Length: 180
Image (cartoon, rainbow, N blue to C red):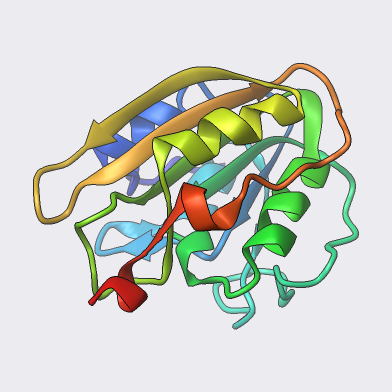
């Protein structure tokens, strides 16, 4: 298989690499001027699946607000997707249920106070600290990019499959649209 140019920006690579061998699930069908992420990951031999309600660019046409019935994955990437989903409990429960023990979640979401036009639900650091109680270790959490385009970059490793408990959204999320 021919390897194509890597479209993944450096700040996203921090949480995605090292790649986990096995199956990868991408939330959304991420693309930029350098290409479609799915095409790139497949070109380097990754067993890649993407989910997007538009079903474009080879993504499965599924709604993350409803239970997603797929076999668990070794890696799940959330690069700017969950902030657009109206049912936060459903999307994070899907992420939890679709991650294998030993697998990782690589999440990059807009930082509170930045990207105000971009989505509605921006998880804070406290959200990921509480989410980790579902059986995860936080491997990395930091801020990427510069204002006004900063992101919260988080990498979680699943060490146990605890029953899912959603962090309290009123205290863990900053709703950009409501704040304006």
